Length: 132
Image (cartoon, rainbow, N blue to C red; front, side, top):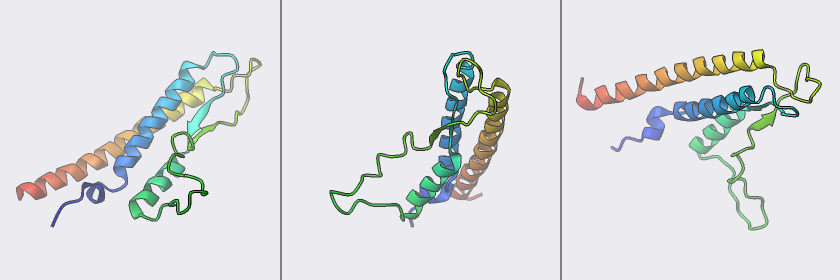
């Protein structure tokens, strides 16, 4: 019987990728906090996880006719959305540095939790393979 790492690791590898992408977007927001007209963005993490779950289950949308839209290329930026500001600045910038820092820290903690869970899965697989 072959071991499928995708099944063994589950959705957690996709969660790490999503957390990394969100960290990049939030860091970009923080870097542009003083840029006039910059619009804060964020990642729809739930949509990313739903897409990963659908691809893992094999129930994703498939293109059955050449006239149908190709949804496989969607997703690179489909989860990347503009944030609705609580109080935009006069220069049109929608980044609230304190909220961005809070979101960044929360994302970092979620990343660490996902990483530790995935590390536990890998350790369990290694123990099982070595017969411990």
